[in-house]
Image 1 (cartoon, rainbow, N blue to C red):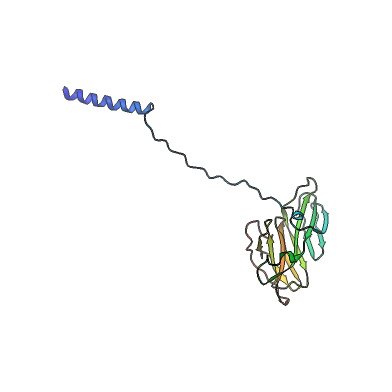
Image 2: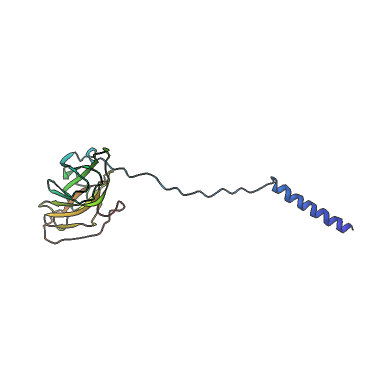
Length: 211
């Protein structure tokens, strides 16, 4: 009988401990893991006219759904149907190529430099990305098959972009998919032109093919 009473007391106190713990006893709180958040910072379309590209080479109003050709000094821009879905003001801007001497890679000499300022005529907002690629054709006697095409970032960084590049003596062609960058075209110092056409792959990074 005594053993039975002892066993009953043990079970009673064990059950009481469980009830006390459930009603607010000491517990261990786990900190939930942090959830990774994605940056919502948008790419801002730069106004290149405020970044040294103050020479307006050409300005033309373009209508959506209509193919156009914009001639601007040494440049020809072939604008296909579907490049824009709104009416835009298409401006070609430039500055003195010598401004980029010492900023392009060694052994290269700036020949041409340009930027685009494309403005939605309905809202006045700048357009940074085109809905269809625009082909840029540059012609200058200093261009050669070894000429290069570089993206200029808003902070002034210069990065080679050979995606879709075709260069030959006197001409360089490159597709454009937006106006996020400005550009500088170079030729090797002391290089003689040839008629060889070259095509490469992009090393420019993340704004899409053809900038």
